[in-house]
Amino acid sequence: MHLSRKHITLLAGFLTGMILMLSCDFSGNGKPGGAGLADLPEIRERGELVAITSYSPLSYFIYRGEVMGYEYELLQLFGEHIDLPVRIEIARDFGEMMGMLESGEGDLIAYGLTVTSARRERFAFSEPFNMTQQVLVQRKPENWRQMMLHNIENELIRNPIELSGKTVHVRRGSAYLDRLINLSEEIGADIDIVEADEGVTTEELIRYVAEGDIDYTVADENIAKIKSAYYQDLDKETAVSMPQQTAWAMRHTSPELLDSLNAWLEEARTQTDYYVIYNKYYENRRAFRSRYASDFFPVTGGTISPYDEVLQQYADELGWDWRLLAALIYQESQFNPSARSWAGAVGLMQLMPATAAEFGADNPLDPEENIAAGIRFLQWLQNYWGAHIEDEFERRKFVIASYNVGQGHVQDARRLAEAFGDDPDVWHGHVAEHMLNKSNPEYFNREEVRYGYATGLEPVNYVNTILNLFEHYQHLVDLEATQG
Image (tube, rainbow, N blue to C red; front, side, top):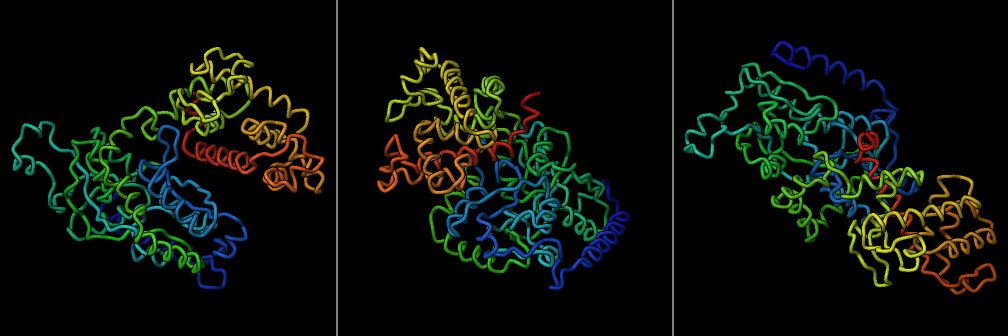
């Protein structure tokens, strides 16, 4: 979308009309209807906090199979503070984030949103997480390393007035668009503003500038700073705004959630972990360069692990989504083919020597042999549980639990579930609860229990962790793209 000053005026009128139209949909309490009124008590009753964020190489991503990100790590800390698990919902751009929050698809936006007056009318914002300013991202001259500093400066835009007639690409729905519209008015000249296609992130636009596909974009200074650690031909020194706050957003109908978030934030700022997380993502330029150059960083077109093609092949034989198999292997070994456990399990799928031999791994430290044997073991478990659990999705939970603790202990938990009136064919809330009881003598000494004591918490956490990691992999790694 190209915006002249005339178009800017028309757009402003259109947006005003849209805001007025949207504001007509009220639920009787002065706030937009349709968003739901879930505040912290209702969220606790639901049993999870739902956070909206976006996939980016700073906020939320996978690196070598591990889920990482600035917002992601802070969300885990906040979830621990309020004693709730956090489920993440992904939005493609700022507009979608805000629409999802208003429609009740999430409880808060966990992303570094620039706080503006218009946004404050629409949402409640937390105390600021960071201060930043918007900067122009542009390429240095091709031969800048051989040039004198003043000659480089002469070829770069240093005064926003020089943006007159220039084309600047920005993320769709971002505060950068509003800032450039205002800047165009301030300098009394047309800036050709292009909103990026849906789903294109600020980080991707910075890459487009570095690769010469576009000339200019606008980004928050902290984002531009860390990206320029990888793209050293970029310049980020020209500010186009005053310092601004970035914060998380929630509906005005969630005051208790807002108070809880602010109380946690105040406490977190007194702890080392809070600053360690910031430095990890925004100050550690060397680590960012390593991640961004890695083949195992999906943001830059990589994959989850060095074994993805093998996993895709074997997952088809197993009838699983390969990303679920990847989640299981990450949980077992973090994709380390030389991993050894205290109990003697080895390799990617952490096979015990007897299991490795039984399922055909002569050298369980060989990655493909280990995976092949592990798959054969999983197939055996699937066949075993196929005779007991009809529902395919439930059956996988029993297979995963059995991979960790053995099918005998899982059968004990099923018999306990049946004895206490729970459903022996449903894992969560039924069999899993009785698996936890397998470490209690009051239960493991009952006649239904044939395999005795088990550390029941381990397989329960194991299943939960793998399913949770699988959910993240589904967010972050496109199934069709990898299969293609």
